[in-house]
Image (cartoon, rainbow, N blue to C red):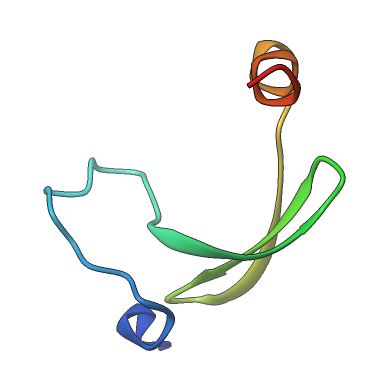
Length: 56
């Protein structure tokens, strides 16, 4: 298992069941590289999140 504290993660709230905490380490357009305790994953933003993000 990976220690997310290595990436600056601090747990400030209880994690909801079924969720996996992680830290974004890279951004390429709407794709994010995220480090989790299980390893590296790719995350995508879709719909209203992309629109709000681009206009922020």
